[in-house]
Length: 150
Image 1 (tube, rainbow, N blue to C red):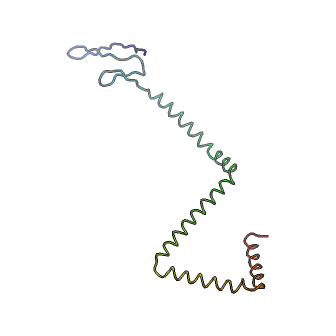
Image 2: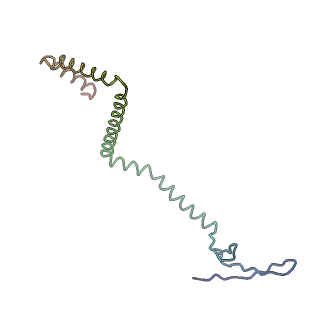
């Protein structure tokens, strides 16, 4: 370790001159106790902050380009992950809603009865006869062409 050079400075007071030892190196200071402590100059600190700021600005300026490239490269897996995540969330919400409805008295048996009656009607109306099944297939194809397009 290199010892800094010290110079003696005399200060004149009314009683007697006193001697104070000051460091001659600009990055060394004397703290309250009298021991030498390294001192960073404000210009070095400002330079470091400016470099950090420039790096952060360069990163943030190029961030949209990075994200655009990432999304264009991985579009299909991201859409797939989004659909999987969305379906999981919707199933959980549906189950939570059904659980809450099941807790209300008389709603569960009422909905079960409505579902049973609708199932019987649908089976009687569309599934028993061949002509009705064809009608159901035509209605389904019309709906599919409206939704998907031709």
